Image 1 (cartoon, rainbow, N blue to C red):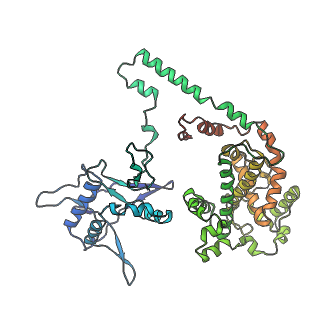
Image 2 (cartoon, rainbow, N blue to C red; image 1 turned 90 degrees about the vertical axis):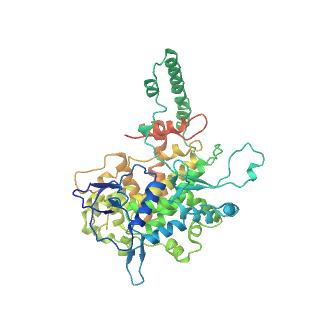
Image 3 (spheres, rainbow, N blue to C red; image 1 turned 180 degrees about the horizontal axis):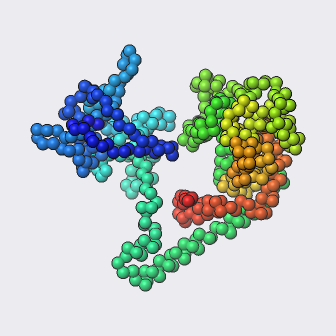
Length: 506
């Protein structure tokens, strides 16, 4: 930003990103030389007035002989051959805007667009996504491209219209705060009527009573389903749709992704692992991988990239295992914490080859880095979460044929006595909430999988987790307040089968 006059006091600019508040500081710099005021005026008119339609923007317009008080220059750069970069001149910026001002999809390219395979179309969409497109005369004239759909029109009254070429639809995602949506609020409607009659009030009361009746119509079915016990043997489900298979498949894909990511990035924290896993298992990515259905998951990901395939498939030992390949139980005599863990091993009937893995599973992040565990249990918790999800999903899918995805996901073990072995920065701190206990269990399963294998995790769940399911159902422990709200939102959707309401937690 250029100003013809020195500003006495600059306004404070704050930006919040990832829940961290940043304050923008202004730095005075010597202005570049590769521009003219006329070029800046042309750019401002195009951006602020033609694209953004900021007709009330006041930059201190001058007279016929003077320019406005403020000017703006975009900081596009080019890389120099000898290294470094420099700000592009305004003539290059204007030339780019002129060259890119053509049609997004020309009429003579429509057939080619519809013949594109999914991968080529996705590359085209990714290149355009985030750009601004403009249509002079429309309101608004410019929108940001968030998505482009080339699905054919669903219906048309004209015969033979399905054979006509059609343009893909540009989608822009808008955000409207729920506080501004008053259309469905009965009190708001009554309050804004000039003179609401008794008949109108009566009609509104009748609609509200009918709505309350609709809200309770599926509760009986919900309780009936959730009260059914598991089968003693594997049983085929009578549910015809694929939600249960999708539930089991989600667990398998997340398990495979988590195992490889955990071993590929031994120094990456839980948040980074979860971000990478989310990008791999997203539906859009899996839809492309489905074309390689006759190959294993790893080949579907990296079959054209041998180097990445080797990185993905080559198992790497945990850092604690790399330090002591033959086992680290020799350190038990030197550390009281490891001696206590031997008692835990005896209680579960499993002896760890690398007992420091077990120690790390019980180490809270508040303890910080120690040479004994090389970190906290967060990464093991990330891994154990998917191990537990896979083992439990497989068991519930086979023995609970009447439960759908939402019911199966709610079954979590939170009452195993592991809190006495956990260590925290504050010696008096112990896990008290269900979340903390579940995290301990997940971290333990992650350590058990790394030290042993998946069969040990399945045996542990068979002995300690699954026998509690019958008691879990009889006591209706699944029916906690949060689950009630989520299940009601799923079952009480509109009669037309639309999307369910999203719970809002305060």
